[in-house]
Length: 261
Image 1 (tube, rainbow, N blue to C red):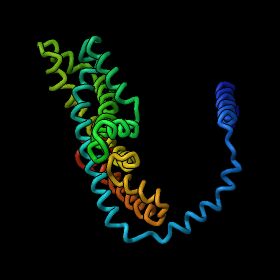
Image 2 (image 1 turned 45 degrees about the vertical axis):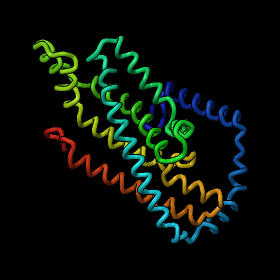
Image 3 (image 1 turned 90 degrees about the vertical axis):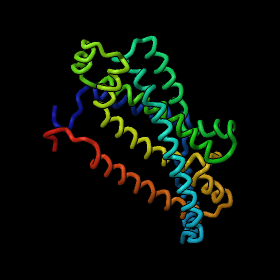
């Protein structure tokens, strides 16, 4: 076998994947010619969108602040709910009769994306930021609960066995050993969800759940693409800034492993 030749098994897998891709494209009746025909529409969009509409900037900032508030509150509420749920779903800490229902609840909440949760919350509480906060909180709860119990189950069993032999209860093991030992991963997951929810809360406004997405929807309906570009530019800058802030927080506050570079 040369350095540029795949062994027989991987070659077969590649062929299977390619065949599945062809079948999927055939089933969907994908017309790549539409992509070629669409280039004039893209040119028209660019002509209508530039230069960006500077007058939209105050609206964009107002919508961004609302989006940040929705993302922050939704993430915080979701984390507060997800941590105990994730702890109870940890099979190294609790019996299966508690673990299975907790995991099932987390999986059920996580099944629907935040956009669909936003639709349901708009139906439940009406249009506005409250629907966005509730949607973010629900999805965050399911997602972080799964990440939490996976992190807790990955911990070494030495400390659990020592405190368990000393008579510690399951809740004491969780509070004194499991959560503190997994705190780095838990905080890292929390920051990731905050980044995700900032992106998601920019979209849920399309269904009436508040935030900058609501303004995006209005400008798109009115086909004011110069305003849309201004709003998207503000969202882009906010997401890049959030990524940089998250990276700084990880480096500043998360404990480093001794001896790691």
